[in-house]
Image 1 (cartoon, helix red, strand yellow):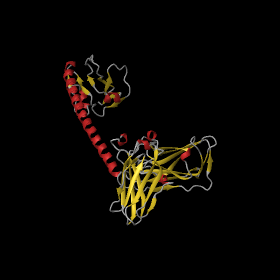
Image 2 (image 1 turned 180 degrees about the vertical axis):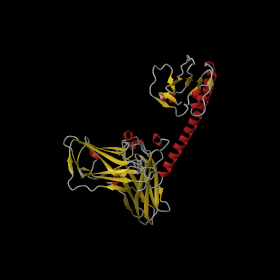
Image 3 (image 1 turned 180 degrees about the horizontal axis):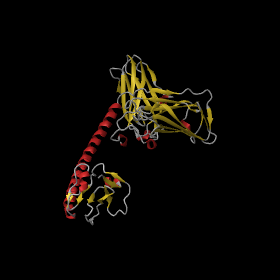
Image 4 (image 1 turned 90 degrees about the vertical axis):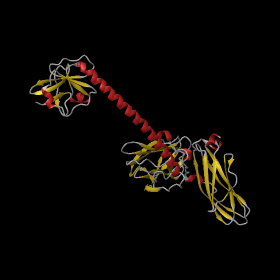
Length: 415
């Protein structure tokens, strides 16, 4: 005879259960009880009090929550039991010992789980500290130049738009490691009331990897590049880009297209190899913050527009290099690197927001490294100047090779 169970899912998933022989009395206890009786050539197990049996299935394995069987003698159907037979209980008085044993075992498991949770939290904290340390170390190296992995050729005739429009397109590349997107603008006539928005999306899961909102006054003709603060996570999914425009009345935008969709470029960098200041980044919407404290971030190339990046320094002369406006909001440390070519000893002094480094000598390899604590008075943007002077009679050429900024872990800008 086969042992069948009515409502098998309920029996298998019950945290505690008790079996009753056909002639055993039901117990006045809040424990699910199942009675086994012979029916139509089978042993049928039904919930105690069930009016009529429903569909029944063979018992595949013993449930984990079974306490035992209430029976005066060993029931014949126990020979059909899968695996080790459950405990045989003469009456309900034996339940107290079983329940006490279960309670002690459960308390022991809770203790083990609590200890495991403490260990897991300690490991998580160690991993967090290690990751932060790794990011800081990675941020000390020169940024890796991104690789162009997708480039559209804009059609000859751009589309002139006004009002509100949105496009979405999938790209023939993975989202992993994407570090920048670029959209091509043929002509721009937009002011503060207009907005260009971009979102970088993992196509299959819908997860958001990047989001930007650029005000109309910041838009410019040509390829407009928007950087991610760090390369996109290593998601093995298709990259999709959503482009939206919302133009104020009388504002217009000529958007270059390819086959009716916005022309795009996609750039990729190795994870941890590029940390970039992204002025129009939507941190809350993207769910990905700017790089953590201690990581040196580069700036977009457009900061050099209107800047004096190279200077010829005559013997015993003085000159300067300068950036008209550098976006510094949120940063409290700045580092500039200059390259000196020539035979004269050169000194440099970096200044920004009312603070300065004082004069710093060139190193033996010809580099001058200048570090400065940024004053909050320099937020959100401020001009940066490097004063130069030659100590000898020979001339020198000085090139501003790099400028980066970071947030300190101690919050130096509070000074």
